Image: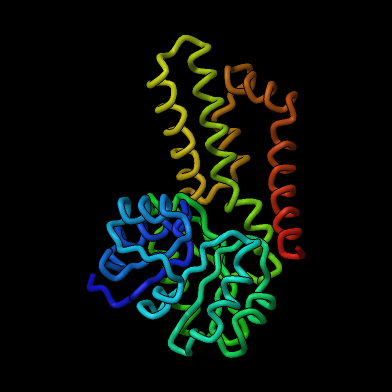
Length: 271
């Protein structure tokens, strides 16, 4: 695929790196058409090394070179960054904010009227083409901007347009969700080791089990409860394990984790 996008990242941390690597792997953009800025030299060096793209110290240099701008700084920094860039943003720029919790209205106020904004909540599996993202358009964004956001994030996974009010829930579920999954993989592999498996085998089996289970949900269209029942035969080993999970409150703990993360995102937006 020929590169037709020039993408700039303001902030070169782990999420920016994952997105950039994902888009390069998907063929949406060549490393030569990607540039990133960050105040931290270590972040710039890591981004340049892992993406193969150029980095700069100045955010203004990014704006001069890119038409798609990804704001990948922390939520408490994004508004001040936008205010600093306000005079340099033009109608040829599309600004994509991935800052958790910061609403479009505040982003628009900081950027200025007429700046085209899209707010997106992606997650780090973008690195391997398995991103789960949702997005909402700002007041000045066009249908073409929405189509571009869909193209960018669907190229590295799945992307859903949602009402902005739902993005905090997306943050709690898929934005933070990889960390919950990693915790489960670690715990399952520890259980395998406790049961006698070698560490490497236990880890790979645990990770592949979650990959396979997720793919079954997506590809069969069956409810996860129905798929669970297919594994849990009467008086068998699986129902015994499920009983322990229910007794430990794992289901409720996961639900509470999503709600707690979503509530934290809402608080970040009010700060």
